Length: 116
Image (cartoon, rainbow, N blue to C red; front, side, top):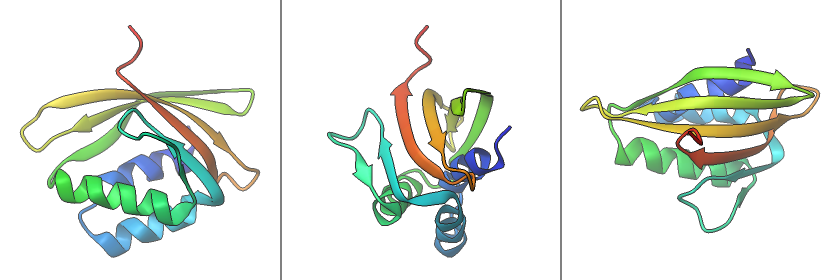
């Protein structure tokens, strides 16, 4: 299991902005591209992704984000992620992730649900 991917998603639930930004700064590549169903177009660069994750943390206080399952094949990681709200509501998402040789995330593409 990729520690960088786990750390990236765990940071979403970190209410400490400084700690969250330190983790994201550590795991995101300089030119990272991030897309998910809530965005009209991909975010580019760590600053844009950090701001987006910070908005989530502010919008969903007390929420946690954790990986339900993850597998890697041919340098591509697929992760099923649980967004668990403070009231217990769970939303699943599936992400396809590419990383560089230093295990920094270069591209993250998310989909709502699990495709089932």
